[in-house]
Image 1: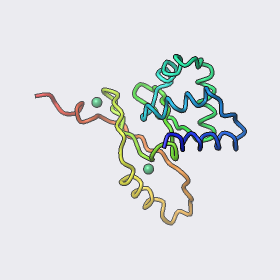
Image 2: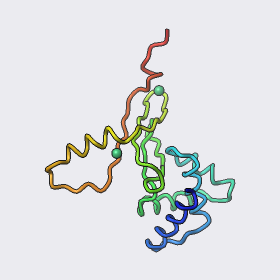
Image 3: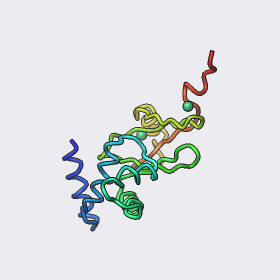
Image 4: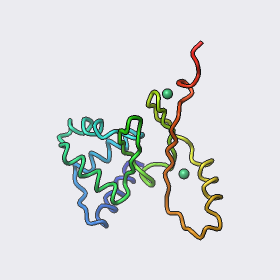
Length: 145
Ligand SMILES: [Zn+2]
Ligand SMILES: [Zn+2]
């Protein structure tokens, strides 16, 4: 699985005129291993031990965004996080708690079928979507005994 997606990354970068460099692969692997949205500061420290500098992280994230390898997720307090998008990860949505900052993945089905229904007859062709829902997680909205 890991190999397959790295092979896919290589092909994608090449078709977009970008080189498949060791640093780009390290950043990709860090995001794949995290398997959740990673704030930029955290990503920088994750790959620093492999010798990837901060400027490279920022530049690579911009490039990954442009060629649709990653998407941004806005966390509590406006912190920007990055995560891989399909086919590099499975399609899902997020619930972000505005009290504790916890991020939960939500299964795609419910929202996706509602979205499909809402687009019927509009003549619009949807290519992709992202849904991040903000509120209070169960722990934060349940009064303690
Ligand atoms: Zn919470
Ligand atoms: Zn969806």
